[in-house]
Length: 118
Image 1 (cartoon, helix red, strand yellow):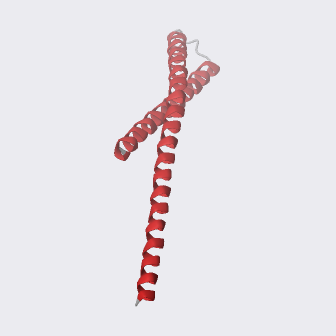
Image 2 (spheres, rainbow, N blue to C red):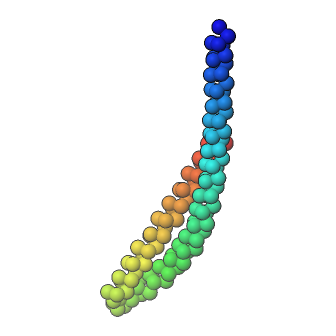
Image 3 (tube, rainbow, N blue to C red):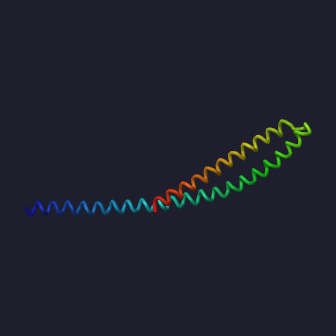
């Protein structure tokens, strides 16, 4: 009877230690997740700041070129090169706009996950 009780006690002791290790591992992973989220948030915010600057520049360039091309169209002097350049500038601006919106969504998603983890 003593041997069985000792074996059961030993099994319970090993199991209890295992759960402590598991709990420590879970806590380590949670801490790593928080750190990863903070790092990704910081990178996304920095990239958003740069993208916003590029977007403002692209919008100004597009506005200026659009006015020039529209004036040339009225005078019937618009060249195919001008129209192509305007279209390319629109595509560039749209691409930057899409990147800006994606980064904004990424930041909102990280904030949402951070609030869920608290």
